[in-house]
Structure formats: structure tokens, C-alpha cells
Amino acid sequence: MKIPNVFMWVFLVVLWGTLTGCENAQSSEPLDRIRTSFFDPQHYVVAHNGLPIGTYSRTASQTEDDEYEFRTTLSMPSANGLILATDSVYQFQTRSPYQLSVASRTTYSVSNDQPYLVEQIYPFNNNDAEIRANEESDKEYGLHEFFALELALIASLESEEDELVSIPTPFHETAKSIQWTIRERSDQSIEVSSSVGDLATYSFEEGLPRLDELVDDTGLSMKWISEDDFVALNFQPPHVVEDIRIPIDRPIESPRSLSTMTVQFEFLDDELGPWSSLLDEHNVLTSSAEPKVSSYTLFEWGGNVSDSQTSQKLRSIVAEVIEGIDESDLIVNALVAYVNRTITYTNWNTLQSVEETIAQKIGDCTEFAQLFTALATVAELPARTVVGLAYHESSQSFGIHAWNEVLFEDGSTREVDPTWNQIHADATHIEFPPAYQHEIVSTLKKLRIKVFSVGYDTDQST
Image 1 (tube, rainbow, N blue to C red):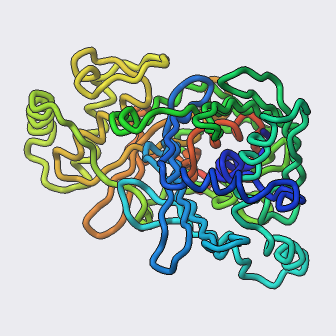
Image 2: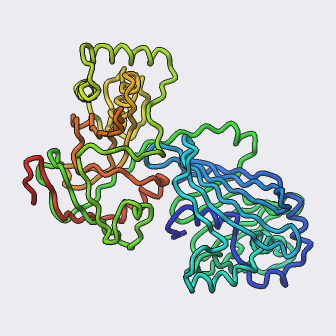
């Protein structure tokens, strides 16, 4: 499913789009039968290339204003180690023709109640002529359209036709119709496919279709689970194991001493995806090794170590490393040096705990960064693990890397890199934007970087 962001993918999962002529093709009886299951929650495990990475749920209620409210919640790890959640809310009138009243979408960090993205999907709140023209057609959008594919599946039980329905994506001025076709039938289920490469399997309970599994052509999938199994789930952000190298137009000399850098991002399909929040109108980004003022209200500072024995070990290490040091910036320097000289770097795809890193004294950049975060937290210094791109001199390309950011009492922050023993991370470090991890990794495979200029501590630039 070649859709630029996961929110549209989720919308297509259950909120299927406008079914032209649905009111005429379907009687009210099938919709009335579907309405009996409105308030039964539906839960799914979301996976990418077979690796479970999150959850998706749909619930429904009747509001005080006597409207049907459907809420979908997608929760998945971001590329920054956070769990991001997106709530989409759709409210419909409770009387025929059950038209849509309002639709909105909010994205936030599970560890922080403050949303970082709020979108009004419907009604439109701008004056664009093309969008307003589409708004007129969307005024006919109601519960019949909301459950368009389900209604078509019910009708298919009494039909031998393989073609189900053609569904345009609503609320989008450039949407194209997606054709759904029956692939296989059995007594218990129906498998359908779309014209954009999606495969969906529905089962029937008391004659009503329920989405059991959906798989798209990007490796993203979701599978139904019971409510008991959903409550028992405990997802942790997976280790970024992709060994991706982003080519550049020319090598960067002495990258570890770089103080400023200006680059241009070039994507093979011209789709910026989540990177649009970091790039200017020319897809240009400028980075600096200078300390910054923290603007990250989204992130949760500090690490969590639940094991008491590990906590005691961390306290013992910190006491020894910072003995006689009182200034916060010097404590940071000492912790960076300790992690770098104590842990031996290994290039692997295994995520281990802080306790295992201390015991085995090996790890990759993720383990270096997580150990530093744990030590800084014990030293009462707010710190977090950062994931993004950094220039690798050995391959003369950018690759996925992990490092740290420390927050000081005056509100300033400093990025450090224990893996490369940097008390000031060089300017090649580019943090991923807040977005779902699989979206970031997908864009990296289509990225090229053009170096415009670089600057060094000696103010020499090329």
C-alpha cells in the first residue's frame, strides 16, 4: 500500500471510504445489523515484516449530544524510543442518513499527555477551492460509507460476483479509488484484495463480518486479538537493526570535529514523509554541535531501571566515576569517558538490558547510549537516548546511530556520544523527527544526501 503515512493506512483499515451508490445498493437492514455490534471493542496487533511493534483498537460510544462516536487508537514505537499514539475520532448523527458531523486526529507521546500534532479532518477549515469542492461530496459521508466494505461483504454472501466495491479515500483532494475483489471464500471467512496490494481476511460471526487480518505491500500488518490478550500485551520499543547506509555526494573530512553542517535531502520518490518537519522549502537542513535550549516537551527525560541490584550497581559506578566532581558539565564528561573506555563496541542486532551491558561490557551504539542514560539518571542529570543519522567515516555514508542528550538546570542541552567518546557530539548527528519507527526506516531506503557546506572548530569550512 503505497501511502505516505501510517495514518491514512489505518484509516483504510476500518474507515473504508465513500461507496458510490451505497445507499441505493444496500438496504438499511444490513446496517441495522452492524449497528448491534457498534460498542464491541476491536483490538489488533500491528507488525512490520512479522515483528510485533504496536496495537490498533477501535471503540464506540454514544455522546451526550446523541451522536455515535468512533475512536481508533494506533500505538507504536517512534524512532526516538518513545511510544507514540494517534487517536482518530469520528462522530455521526444517530438518525438516518447518519451523516458525519466531525472528524479529528491527535498524535501524542504515551509518556506525555501534551499532543504534538492535532488535525481537523472534517469539516475542512481552509479556503482552498479544490478542497471545498471535495467537501461538498463529503457531506454525503455517513455510516453507510463508514461501513462500506462490511456492507459489501454481507451482500456478497448471496452473490457469486468476485468484484466487491470501488472505494475512494474520503477527505483527501487527490484520493484515487481502490478496488476490492474477493480472492477466496469458505464457510467461515472471505479473503479480499485491493488494487493497491492489500490483503484482508474477514470472518463472520452471526452473519456479521469482522476484520481478522490485514497485510499491505510494505510489510505492515495487523491481526485481531481478544480483549483479554490485548490487556496482557506489553510492547517495548524494538531495537533499530536496519543496516542502512545513506550515500552522499562527497566524503566529509574530519567528521568528528565538525561544528556545523548544511545538507540537502533528496528522496527518490520526492516524498518527504515525516522529515518535512525538519527540512526547509528546499529540503535543506543545518545542524550544529553548539549547546541548545531545550524545546522538547514531548520527550521523557531519564531512564528506568526496575531491578534493585542493577540500580545499586549503577549507584556504585556513579559514585566512583564522579568522586570529587561537583559541576554538572564535568560529571557529564566523566560519564561519557567511563562508558567509552568500559564498553567494547560490537556491531550486532541484539538489544540487551543495562544490566547485561554492565556484566558483559560489550554492546553497540544503542547499549552505549542506554547505559549513559541510566548512569546520568542516577547522577540526577536529566538525559535521554537519541536515535538518528550520523556520518560513518569508514563507509563514507550516513547510517542509523544512537547517542545522548543531557538537560542542564539553566534549560540548555548538550548532545554527547559515548560510542565515539564525544563530550560534544559533532554536527553530523541528525536526530530522527518524531514519527513511527517503520516510517522512518522506509524513507531512509530512498534517501540521498547532498553536502552543501561544513564548518570546523577552527572556523575552516569547505
